[in-house]
Length: 271
Ligand SMILES: O=C(O)CCC(=O)C(=O)O
Image 1 (tube, rainbow, N blue to C red):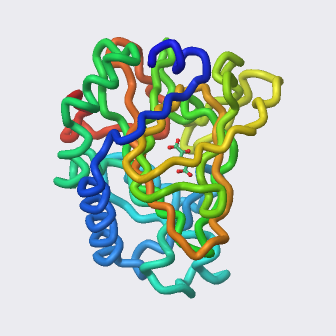
Image 2: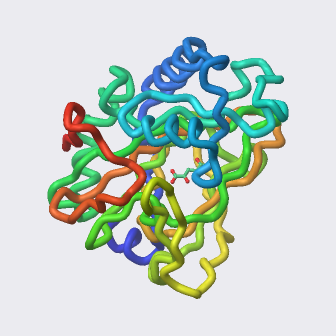
């Protein structure tokens, strides 16, 4: 498993979660969406170019459970034009600390063992999200390397991406650039004064994501922090819920200018 991960930059672990665990997490995500006040937070997910209000909502989500809307679910004034059940792009980013169902899943020994196997000596649970990819509206995720957003020195970010439902090329599965993690980190998304900016670190283009990661419910895809990956729009009638948990090594230095900063009352924790 270690050799495959080092060679490809990703690792597919089938049957990592049971059907029941996945069903419980989908039900919990749907509960969170049902209780979301979409009139108070009409924020479309975007890592850049947001208004100050939207940007505050995004930054605060580091230590909260926040829902972000699909671009196609709001009109020009930001009002919801789709049913709320179909309108949420993702929920994040502290589910693993604040929500009992996601916290329980994330802190099991099997997650801890996987983190250790992959070389994290002092794993910390940094960020979690449910990506909904609702039928017909689920938006694309552009090619990126996770260490761009979750930077440590030395780099240590690893993503555990769990398919809560089957992910196929029809409903917007992930695609990866096999071996692309061996190229340099292309950019960093970081705080500069009051703003978040993207700074290029390398001129090389990201390797093309030509490998579709079609997986069944319960499969975990482990993602190296430098692996370019993306997902396309969901144009199908089937949703593609996934739960992503990002880990870092507590023995690395976490950058103070990363977007995700925890307040003193909710420090990062390990398993
Ligand atoms: O679920 C997706 O479509 C993208 C997820 C992703 O980019 C990640 O977990 O790093």
